[in-house]
Length: 235
Image (cartoon, rainbow, N blue to C red; front, side):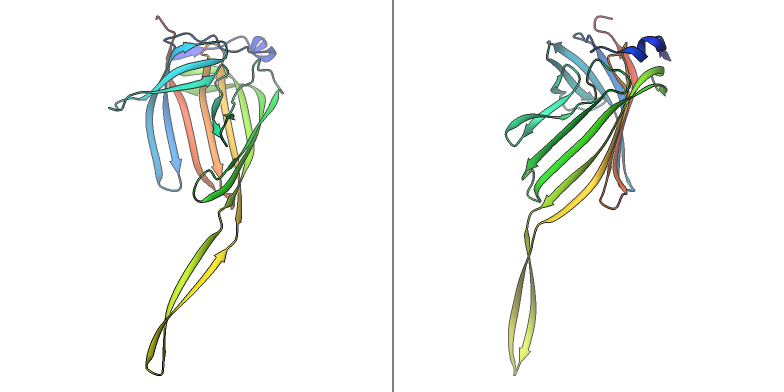
């Protein structure tokens, strides 16, 4: 068991960006819950390959998997970017350093035709540094900085056409009647919740939770990570 804790006064004032080095490695228990029966758990290892002033290059691999590790680029604050409408866009930013109680920021973006089903999809999340909180994970007990994010999503479904067929018999003759109906765009909305527990000496979160709720207010998906172990490069 590992126990890491900065003095509460130091954490409460501010936490600067992590000083990550090549070889820094975190191993997490990752749990995915989808619907009433879609439960899966894996063990993911994240290792820093190199770090610049603006980005962290790392590899991610699943323990026991025969697949090659994925090489990933994150921002220096562990934010994630991807192409949205042809432009690199931040889609997840759990931290904006320095972290201090009450600090807040927003991540929002809109995609046009992200899939064959959706005409558009919008995401909006408001992040806030809640304060310090004690958290216990497989790696040990930590005094962490907790960040929460609440948000919403809106999707516009592509217009579609339904076709129904029926057989009609009249005076001995049989005819096939086809009826086509065009259904216009349909909008759906939902909510999101995220939480991250960041420990400065670890340089990353020790626990994270991401939840996605449908239009009916029922949770459809939840993803949880908990730190199993951590080691500095060269150790």
